[in-house]
Length: 463
Image 1 (spheres, rainbow, N blue to C red):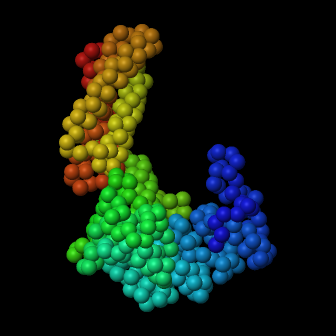
Image 2 (image 1 turned 180 degrees about the vertical axis):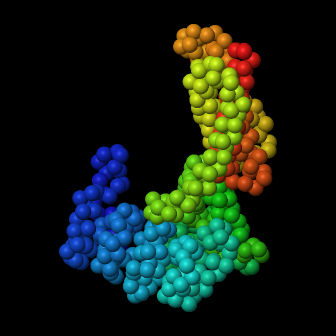
C-alpha cells in the first residue's frame, strides 16, 4: 500500500489538526460505503497510511466499520491490523473474510503476528495461525510460549546475520542472494560458530567499506544483547539508555533467537508512559473504544477506595465539629488547606513515579530526593502561609485565624512533599505499582494531615 502521495486526505495546515484525518475525506469514504462504490472507496483509501486507516476504523461506528471492511475486501492490508486498538481489533478480524485475513497476515513480520494474536481468544488465534506457512506458524507459536510482555514476545525471528570471520564482500553477496531477510533491518549481526552474537555492523559501514575489509574490524563499539525472558519494559529502557537501533535476542545458552528493533522498543516505551498517566488517575488500562460497562467496571474499584479515604478525612473533621460551629470561617478555609496539600502532593508524586519508571530514582539518591521534596514543600508552604495568612486577616478580621491557616499551610505542604516522594518508593519496594496506588495514599495523607493540623491548631488558638 502506498504511504506517500501528492493527494493526501490529511489536514496538516492547522497545528492542532496536524496528522488528523480530514473530515471531508472521512465523509467521502463513508459515502462510498453507503452507495457501495468499491472503486471510489479504493481510490480514497489507497493514499492512506495503515495507521490512518486504523484511526478511521476506530472512529466510525460498528455498523459502518463492518460495511467498510466488507466492501474494501482484498485491499485490506495486514499492517492495519497491527495499528488497531485491541478493543476494535477482534471485531475487525471477525468481519474479515477468511481469504482476506489469510492474505493480510502472510505479509506481516513474525513480531507483528505475535502482537496481533497474543490478546485474541483461542478461536481467533487459530483462525490466524492456520493461514500462516508452517515455518511462520512454528515461529509464532514459539514466541507465544515465552512469558507475556517479555523480549521473546517482542522480537522478530527474521534476522540478518553473518559469521564473524567474513569480510564485507562475502556479506554483501550473501545479503543480495538471501530470500529470508527481514523487510527492514539496520544491522548485520555477527555470530560465532555456536550462533552466539558477538557484535553488530551497520549497513552504512558495510556499504562504505572495501570488499576485503573484515566485518570484525568495522563492528560497532556499543553492543547489547537482550535475554529472551527479559521484561519488555527493561528492553525499552535499554534502548533508550544506550541509544540502540536494534539488539539481538539470545536464549539461556546465549544463542541468537531473534532481534528487536527500535520501533518496537519505542512502542513499548510509549505504552508504559501512557499506562503511568492513566494509572496516576486511577483509570487503569482502558481506551475510547471500550464499552460503557467495561469502562465503569474498571473505574469503580478506585472510586470506591477514594470514597473510603474521603470518609476517613470526614471522620477527622467530625472530631472538631464544635470548633467549626463556633467559627464558620474554618469551614470556609478548610478546602483551601486540603486543596493546596493535594496539589503539592500530586506534583511530588508525579515526579517520583516518573523517576522510578526511568530508573533515575534509586537507593543511592532516594534520601536526597526526599529531602529535596520536603524543602520544596517548606519553601512553598512559607510563601503561601504569608499570602493566605494575610488574606485571611483581611477577609475575616482575625489575626488568630491568619496564624492558624499559615501554620496549617506550612505543615501540610511539607507533609505533601514527603508523602509524594516516600509513598511511591515504599509501594515499589513492596512490589505494588506506584503509578496505580500512590495517588490514593498521598491524597489521604494530605487530607487527613491538612484537616487535623488546621482544625487542631484552631482548637488551641481560638478556644
